[in-house]
Length: 293
Image (cartoon, rainbow, N blue to C red; front, side, top):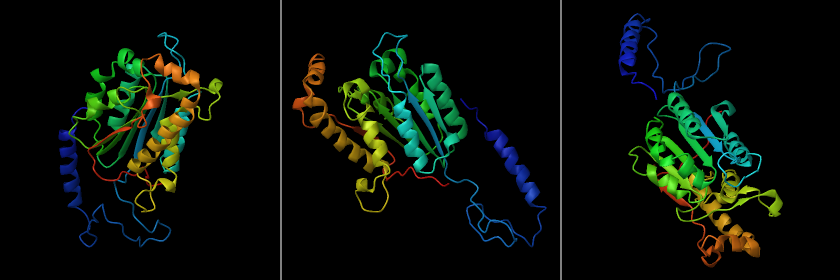
């Protein structure tokens, strides 16, 4: 993780103040937060702020479980593709979106360090992870490292999305983080989601929540307050409704898929509220993924 740079920053501040004392007094410095018109021909008519809002994202997906003896999820990293597409539509710089195809604990730590080193307090940080919940719990030991690493990212707007079975199990550990953040779990901590495979013959390949969430971010039909923009919170509500409908009308319409849940000792087809998307929001205002081009 990054070291404290306070001393270095203080020296640079003192040095800049000394230099500014030599400036032409007839041309006072312009506050960096103010946009002004340029009086020089050929230059951009607006001076950009020194610290625009930038987006930094990590999209982590695990499809191959051959080394740990779990069932494979061969969907050709479609989750990453969908989420990257959604972010790029919102103006995110493709170079500031990291695709993490297959991961272990060290790989996740490396990406969290990258976010800490690059994002500042003015930025948007988006961390998305999908895989088997059992893998996150047993093989990754998620709760043993993620909360501490997550808390060290300096951005004031941090979004965590987990699409996995028992997903809320992996968002609950960061609820104690005192800094503003928004966490989204595709299903509750005691629920098992659905990840569609091509051979099943159902319409959606991959995670149902991710499919509808990525879609809703660019769909004004999800704009619940009519302000002409879709917030993350609004997209989540739209995705939850559609995920629930899909599970009950499409997945549970196939007897063998219902039996697969019964084999786990549960009967979600009898629960009209299944599945529940779990949101923890300490930002407490609409969050939009749009960033400056």
